[in-house]
Image (spheres, rainbow, N blue to C red):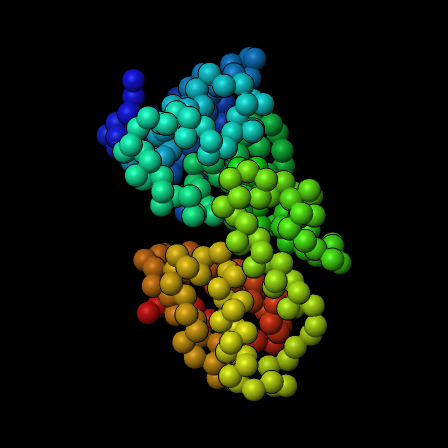
Length: 263
């Protein structure tokens, strides 16, 4: 029987020849390969990139499953596969609080491409609910089209928070953001201290804020500098800067300009 520790040795970490579908991670450092037979049953799976035990174990878990089983796959499959493996449980405790789970994110992206959807992983937006593949754009679309949003209504519409519910805190923050941003605000009409509090709050709602250790560094005129502590490429920095500007300006004020600066 394969133990979770075995996946640290690179199990399933190899390119797959003639895959039915392959998809790259957001930062191009990992590729997931899937091969299906004519009955849409997965016969082979592997990944290429840095050794990742979670991706390796995904490849082992999903083998011989049909397409419908793969679409509904959740983190429960890991719990069942390694229910007697204490090494797995020691690592999984830190994973439960994460909103984004790369293995499931890649799997759902690959399945969408395999099913022929007009879908590009790079433009898909961040995964919010890893159990049902709900992305940031799905939640934002709900918030923009619903005058009186609620967690229960959001779950009924998108299925978010109907699985392990680890995404629930983030969803609640988005609902609060919707309420706070319903009225138009301009930075010149309020004290600077009040704006700093609001900027700090909205920044805490941004999905990458915690991982990047983002903090408000300065606020001068209409320019807000946000420091971060994360080793990233220049391309990733520019892309995240654009996303952050769009995210914060929608909730705060379209005239405010936000800039990322390394700590």
